[in-house]
Length: 61
Image (cartoon, rainbow, N blue to C red):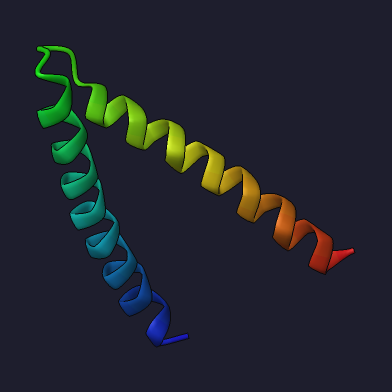
């Protein structure tokens, strides 16, 4: 379990970079003051978490 915190740091860093890049690209395309990039990334992330939740639930039953 020593590697658990290390994996958490790596995943958090990669997630932050991905969020920054994706939201930046979407925000540039929208040219609006509203943060559509953050909104889009949150929707994508919620769908991904829901998919992973269902996937892992099928392994535990």
